[in-house]
Image 1: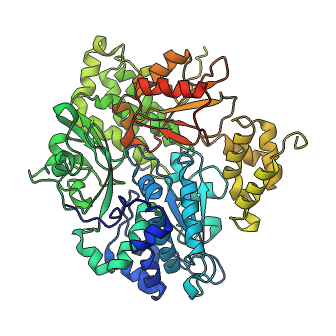
Image 2 (image 1 turned 90 degrees about the vertical axis):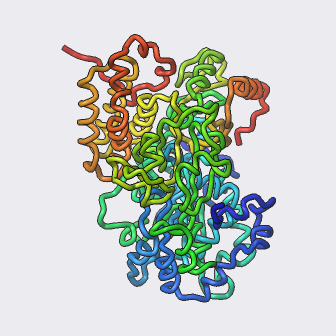
Length: 451
Length: 169
């Protein structure tokens, strides 16, 4: 059984309320942290080895240590709650059911960073969650954990919730800041990084919801004790949102020592594949990470068991492995079409491209169109090569990682499932009337041909 | 325009509360939250005069409002029905049968994606991942998610909409 740090009290009735949360030991980390210096807190977080839980996995303490501290300029903490990556719904669970855990983590983190104002940027579609968060904020304020002179220490902090309006790109930290400034969510060129010039050109740290929530156990346990949980550089626990063709979809907290096989088949987690079907493939870290066929997912290239942690999942690089990413775990059974699934993901990236960089703006709808052509039985072998070529021209050639996120699923699908692409091309009659295709409209209308 | 289009006093109070979250000289940050209020209060979509009114309120240029309103998928740029059925069609929802759900709604309401029913009651939209992948297939109606959809459950929801019994807010 995995150790639970974030979800340990999730089952307790009324845990959304300050009263019940406090009875379970809530806000103790704030009392502890406010007796430390900000530098000591940053050191604890560094010692813990906590890596960003939004997808990139960058060391949190190191990120915090980059924050510029010019005189007379405010600093900000912005919590990235824009969770929009297909397969990822863990932050929603945290905010919806244990909102005080996030608020508590934000107080500790803001104190460490020297921020007196913090924002939660939440995706607009999660329209009922701001009410839950705002209630938690009000309760924490009434109890003296927010507002002026917190617990008599002289530290002031206000937390505000800011709703976005349905743009996946706003999960990219600089696009998020643009959106928070009331603009289109177009990513900024880096450097300067937000830690130097972020929100309103002030030093800003942008961290994911789960990352900030994990600061609470880091302080409660100490960084050194937190680092003992998990394995190697995959310290602490990780939330995995599991979905697709599994018996028990949901959000699970793991300590990153279990095997992928155990996660998929044991009753404690996903409970296996419905109707006894075989596992075909899986995307273990949110839609942008490479899809992996069953044989490479369960075993490494050396035949050893693959584990649910950053290092093991990335073993072998993108050629054979994949990534932990955001922990959005999408399972495909033997009856699923990888070509169709990749087509839906390509449609997603084409729809969500902000349009700022040409390779992404032009390339993502192009990839979708080629995939749609192949899936509908009108493709040729040359289309597979064209698809490969287009994704290569997107990857690494855009301001933000959305280009890579759009290219990797296509590359991995061709790399591991080329025979399936060829089957669609060789069996046009079997695929031509594919049901459901009409829903996926071309994201950009094709202009009429003029002679 | 602002002579005919104006928020109710209670909404204006909400606007004041929202703008107070940002530094005084950064009022523009309130734009997206205020557009949400505007869309809700003025018929479910953002007409140009409404956007002009928001610009005036936040002391920014109308073009600054237009470029934001047209960027974000939650803002409607044309009239919609009373109930906007936003069905997720991405990856995990597709794996769990969102195709069937979309097809069923199309046939039941006799409209295509992006269209409104003649009685102005429903609009059908397909959307990209709403973070409900473990509860797929799903759709959003107003402020709330309806998950683990089946054709029967969709029929029930549509009927409750017709009876005015579905909460949007």
